[in-house]
Length: 214
Image (cartoon, rainbow, N blue to C red; front, side, top):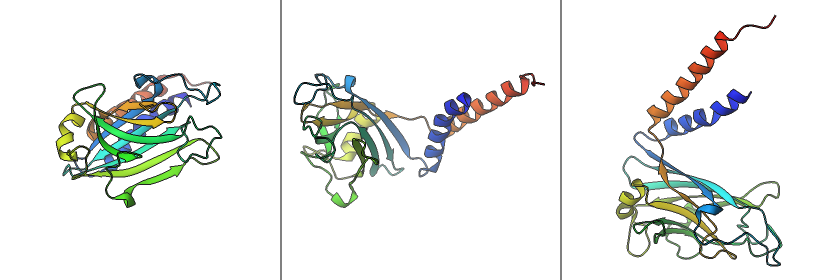
């Protein structure tokens, strides 16, 4: 079972890449509290510790480079203002930053709070986590003309593809940012499929060499 669990994330990533449009570029980010410069210890308004916040995000840039689809999930951040009784973990804003300068780059696409550069609000979907869990998912599309401070997706793409961008979520307690994750390009689908199939073949060979129990 351990080998299957280790193999599953790679196979799942390969399937995600192969199911995207031809020549699409996939970027991923792992959001953590310790990546956000200046973010203080996570506390309630009464000074008690609160659960560590974190998240993940996946972006798919279409082959025409005119849209970047986003799916982000955050945990232990109150996205509605009513998931927890304390206000310190309430979400106030969420953005994608693109540099230079880096690692503290300017906001280039805001999709929650201010600035709001998602000019097609019907594309933004926010879904709280099920079962009373704190957090939720955000899905939207960064369209070609959208951007902050006179920029667009097109003008920000060089920095994004060069690894000079990150997504972050701001809370009441950490107005400058509580969690962030750098956007990194995922290897092309063919590479992922080769890695996944290679691991599967290697595990099969190891299993075949293992002596059978009587």
